[in-house]
Image 1 (cartoon, rainbow, N blue to C red):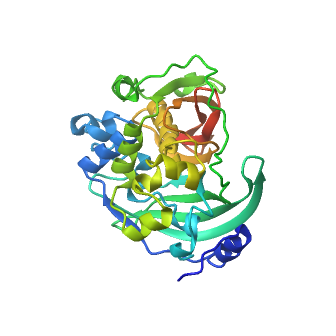
Image 2: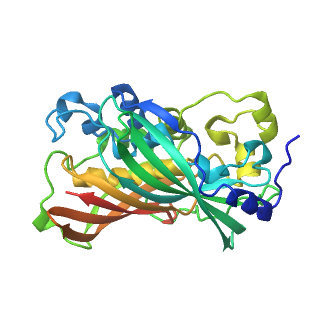
Image 3: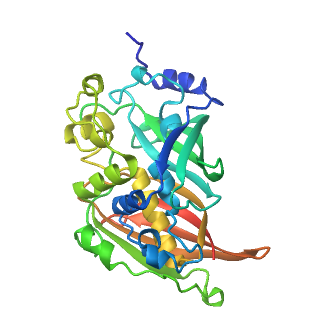
Length: 356
């Protein structure tokens, strides 16, 4: 039987052995119209630029392109940051849960309709930190290169995952969920259809003022359906072999065990069914593209995911213009964007750089 890793020190030592090594290429997902629309279903982004061929034909690309975060549809790019090169059979969430902590994404070119997107991951680094909530933990980092079937580089990403010792005894990560704002619980479904966007009207550079707020993005109250749509439309779903179910002591590992409340509490230290952190990263990108309009392109996202998002939490994404500047002939804007729950707690945040 494979020797299980049971201490954080041992995990850190074994993870460090993989630094500099690459994992096999993953992905190969086609940016078909169906897959792009399914991605939009998963993140709640019904921008016609990604969905309506007639509308997209009037854009600068003259065709459907995939949203920037479609790279997650090919691969979340978290494998090397979760395990490095460690044999997965040596690890168990009974010992070491993991949480997505964010990272930096640089976007290099559009994803065209029909492109196939692949991902190559390389183990970068591991560092130890401390938190009052979970004690000592490790930030495991990996570099992900996304490229298309023409071998053109589409995006690069630094992924950070937090690994920590299971809190045990049914203890869960504490964070503020008490309703302290005027945000009311509501279904996310109608909000998807009611969303207003900049569209094909170009932002007026002269009217953009640093410090100004941008229109907020209501995501409603997080539901199991929202979790399912992201799992199905972005990550992909499948069935679990008996060995995996037995190892994780779960009857349902769909969504990485996110649907199984008992597993979520005991193995992931979450207070209930919980989201994929990258789902909120997609929301942070969406508020930026909605504001910037069809003629803009996302250049970079520098993102941190700080707290969980549990089924029943109500989410709103806010943003403001932090900087406008020129780089040669390019006009650039940095937006500070963040997701808040019903307590007004910032659970994820990013600085998004846009070329207008």
